[in-house]
Length: 321
Image (cartoon, rainbow, N blue to C red; front, side, top):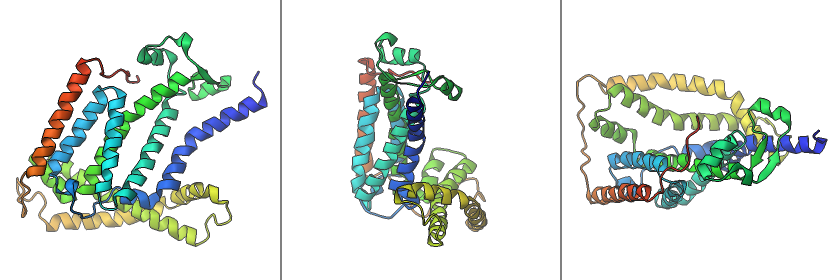
């Protein structure tokens, strides 16, 4: 039988795993912070002068490297790219915000995998027998309804921590592309890759819509807070107050976006989108010295990854089924 204290601790651990990522996202980053790291701002540094096709290729290469290479290579790429954010406009601020986003992804991934992962898979991934695992916590039997394994082990936590860097590397690279390129540059680059126009249009509308969603949410939430919503709650509960306010602001945000969709349609029509089989461009974006240098860096990264895999540093972590 489990004591009342054991049950209370189990539920506290459950609440911790669910709430901490949201607490970091809403408390440390905030809606306005998400708008900052998903919006383009004009600036003149290395990343802004880099051809958009190179940054798209960078994202693809990083996803492949993080997929097939050992986990610490993904970790090095994650923190290396994150450190390079200082070269962006308001770079320290964007590195701070993205850092908290990465932290929330790591915590969310660890807690989203560790309690559910069968110990047999963890044993296969870490090449360690289950008998040598270190049990951190034993869940009450009824937690099996949630899909939890009976025992939470240190090895399960470590395994889930490794998995998280499959995602963080791709997120950092994708945000870098969004923050340093206009939608027009993305359209031009994807057109050269022979991507169908409807797909390109959908992606670019999404690029423009995501910052608009955060901006609309931010405005609606601030208005709710100015009107006294959650004003009598303790300060440490503020992120949850913001979350509750965000839920109540979903309808006004959707209405605002639907009104904006009409403007997007008018804009596409006035620019004669898809009026001709091929597009014409007023400004050309030829490859420059920086593009060739970074292309060489990508080749080195791919070559080094292939060598690392051949030396046994390949994907040591199986995917979940």
